[in-house]
Each structure stands twice: as C-alpha cells, then as structure tokens.
Length: 146
Image (cartoon, rainbow, N blue to C red; front, side, top):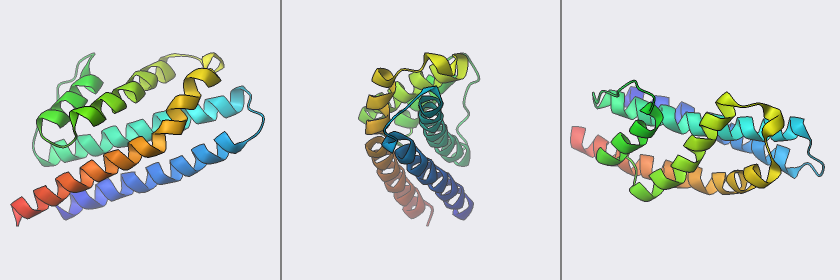
C-alpha cells in the first residue's frame, strides 16, 4: 500500500507541475500555434497522469484491464465499477479522454482556441475532484487493509 500511495503521489506532483505550465501558457496575451500546442500537450499530460493513477490502483487491486480499441473508455468504466471514481467524474474525464485521442492522432495546427479554452479552464477543477475522489478511495482501501 505504501508503494501505491508513493506512486500516486508522484503522479499528482507531475500533474500539479503541468497545471502550473498550463496556467503560464494561458496567461500569455498573444497565443499562436506554439502556445496552443503547449496547452494541448498540458491537457493531454494531465489526463494521461490521471489514467496512470487509475491503472496503478487497479493493478494494486489485481484488476485486469483489457487491451482493446476501447481500453481508455474501459478504464473509466472499470474505475467506476471498482468505486474508485464517481460516474459524474467519469463523464467529466471522458471529455479529456476524447481530447487525448484527438491530440495523439491530429496535427497541432488543428488545435483551436474555442475548443481548448473551455477544457483548459475546467481542468484545475476536474483535477481537484479527481484527487479528492482518489484520496477518499485510498483512505477506504488503507482502512480495509489495516
């Protein structure tokens, strides 16, 4: 359990650092393709970090995940089933999952302010809710294993 908490904590720190970079990029008065690409990368990295935490928790619980075309969606579904995150949070994360897919398979020159801004503005709140739900789950898991 100590190893899991440490691994989750490391991911959380990387996400916080990435949120700082995101805020720096958002604060620039003029944004061109470089800033929007950086903002997109920050969104992608934060979502990937949250997925990594879910995977680590599920691995600790010895829950096997399928490897399929829908594995990223399946991860969120299994996390709900295991009581790690709420369905409401999963819906919020699903928007970032969709963006992750676009970001990985598209060109940075296709990124648009009107699509990225709402995601970037909401991300700190989504991350806070995610961290809260993860902490609650880890507390319950810790008490159950004591």
